[in-house]
Length: 349
Image 1 (cartoon, rainbow, N blue to C red):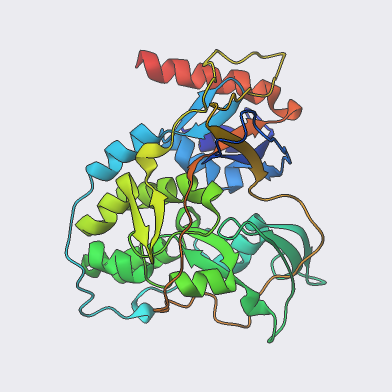
Image 2: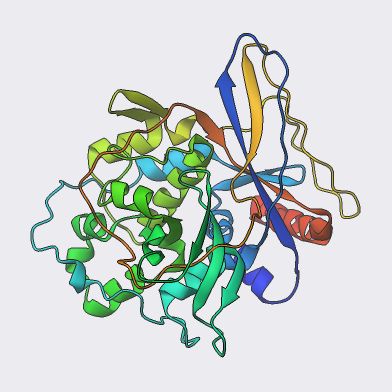
């Protein structure tokens, strides 16, 4: 049974705490400077479960890390296509519909999923009025209030842009398939509006989040969506995902550089004890644990403004090799044991 289905079935219930670990060259510092700010998220409603289902994450003690080797292998197996967008029209992808039939459009579903301190409109169990976005693309906490002048501050990004999907094979889909893709939570991420607009139609060779701690997760998400939908990708973007590249003179690492932390020991998780993974930095580097989405004050969700702008403006990427650990809190001890059984079953299979 897929990990996400296992969670939804009620066989296990736990909250997943997410942090991000980045290694940055720093000869002057021999010991890591660690700041740990866990953020509780419902695994079954997040982008974490799809990566675990796809076996793009590996467990070390009580933490999950993006498995760079697995993601790189999947990226190498993707079809390659040219960059022609002939015939593309955003309106061919009906977006912000209600694919799961819960009475709430996909945009508000994502705001509820990705924001913290969410306040819904009076009398509604759908429309988000306020909340805080702990933006993975910039690493900043974005507070908002819904309104014509403020809603655009939080937009919903298509991780694989609709135009890129069209180039990769969605031009051969029917309207139903394109609508399903445009509203699939696996390919959606609430993001700071300016970052989303700067990304536009770009993939990894032309745009990467300025928050380098999110790079491994971002590249894994892109690869997961492309593989799940059997979409092609240009050779230059495929190479950028795997090996990294340079954007506007700034280099970034590819997913092949996403590895388990130095000094980590892979052990079977305990059903009764959950301990923090110890990360020992190499003498020439500094290891810093930073929050991907720390719980912060109230903010607001957008809706009146354009939810996604596939623009054509460049953005700088920053240097850094990132590995994303998903560290379980004490409430997840039972889930750790259950996950171990699932992983053991997969290994035997």
